[in-house]
Image (cartoon, rainbow, N blue to C red):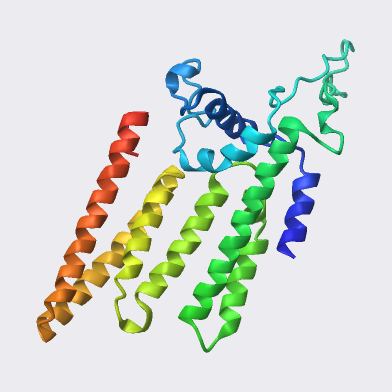
Length: 276
């Protein structure tokens, strides 16, 4: 049902809604120039508005679709000139909003097809996020399978989420990473036993979240709380049972977390002039 609903919205909603064109043009810039854009590539004050200062992961993920299908046509397309209807602006729009290209007539091609491809990619991200939500519910409440189903349904069909996963942006990728992160956190602490191998996955997901969108730092904040709990629990158990291997695992995890955060912060500072 989510797939059918998402495809319907993708086709019905006119392309280049809100910042879709801005995200697309950043990916096109990377494809054409082989690097991320910076503020010098835009008029003063426009880089942020044009999404050019967003972290790179989504753009890299979307790059193959644009590199394969893009045909360099204007995004968004040019429009027909204003109608000459003096005095009629109060009752009639003087702008004909029909693009000056047949690329929007199905079957679509070029940049238009790439735009729809990026929408479908985000829909796939959203569907996988729903799966992780379902699995997390089943893991946390094994005796109440309805909780996993309700959680997955809420994520799949909540109107704002539907819009998020059917338009071009980096939100859907962050949603997927956050859902996967929640599942891995549940696996790490499942049954009151700290499974440190999942900590490596959480650290990786935290880094991916930060490299996707500024709000990805919230994923790191959540993981820090998980790590603090796990480290505190491990230290307490190591004290009682004299298991130094658990203590070493906790300390290694803490070092890996700090190194990951510092590495991402250094990349952001070198690319955007801020650690965020």
